Image (cartoon, rainbow, N blue to C red; front, top):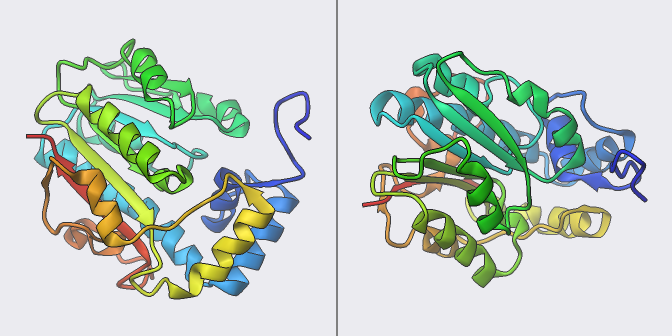
Length: 265
C-alpha cells in the first residue's frame, strides 16, 4: 500500500530498480532485492541500463550540436542522475527548453533537481502517464513552442505500454503535434540482440514489480518510426548508435536494447 507520500515501499518500481542498476541511492530494499535477483538471472541488464543512459547523452548532444534542436520533451524521465537531458542540451545551447514527464511519486519528489536551468533556457516537470499524450501536450505547451521543432524522447518507456495499438497511437499523437524537423528518440528492450536470456527475468519482473513490461522485436519497434526519416545508423543496439560520440565505459559492444532516432519530414 502507498504511504501518505504516495510511495509504495513494498513493491519494486521500475524507476527505482533502474536507479539501483545505475549505482544510485534513490531506491528501497525491495527494489534492490528484485534488481539483484534479475541481475542474477540476466546479468547483462546492468549493461543495458548503462548503455541506455549513455545513448541519451549522445543523442541529446548530437541533436543540439548537429541538428540545432532547442526543445526536448522527455517522457519517462526516471530518477535524476548525472547528465540529465537539460544538462546535456543546455551545455551545448543554454537557451534550450526541456520538459520532463513521469508519474512515479519518487521522481516527482526529486523533480526539483530537474528544474534547474540556465537563465536563457527553461525546464519543467509534468506528473502524467505516458499513455496520456493529450494531457502531456497541453501541459508542455506552457514551456515548449509546438510551432518549432521538438525532440520527443521516449527512452525505455514504450515497453511499459503493453498494448501494441495503444503504444503506436500514443507515439502517433505526440508526433502529430510537433512540426516538420522534429525528432522521435526511442529505446526499447528486445529478446533479440542477445536478449534471449531475458525471458524468465521479464516474467519474474511482471510477477514481482511494477509496472508490467513487454519486449518487442525490431520489426515491431520499427513501426513506431513509420512516416519518419530514420537517421543513420538506423534501428540498432543502442550501444551501436553513433558510437563516435560515445566514451568507453566498459559497456559491451552490443546490448539487447534497440535505439533509434527518426526525423519528421
